[in-house]
Length: 204
Image (cartoon, rainbow, N blue to C red; front, side, top):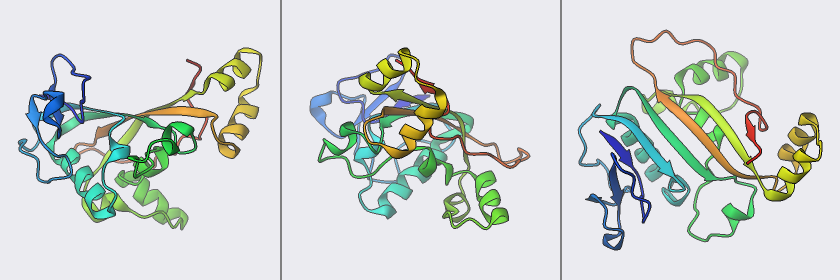
């Protein structure tokens, strides 16, 4: 089974399209903030969350419950594919229904390997994977630049200058795309390095 969370009008073939609004005509009419979801544990191989997670979980407890549900329904090795507006973009701040930034730093907290790394290095990052007993590792993270910065890249802006801009200014990155994988319980975990903000930047 594959899920398309918060589908709206963007129904995907081969997916169970889920939305809370009947007007979207979803396959499953359900409020994702209401947990548990009516989906069997370990029954899902892929979850699409396209511009939806930033709308969910204004209360921290609600957001964490959603992440636990995502982990519960995913089969070991299953993928969560996220697209969301960058937290320093007009795309994020221009919509009053956006309640939570979604980025690789946030998602990294749901990896048990990262939790061990945080502890070993004495970092203060909250070890959510350990607290919630879930394990989602980032396997890919890319950034889509705003049109003005895509043009600068095309005109020869260096990767170093782009990285500085992405870490310093607003409206450099328009959208983030993050792919996470549910780590099988028997997998041997190693230390995970977090990607830098400009790693895997997409020009288009």
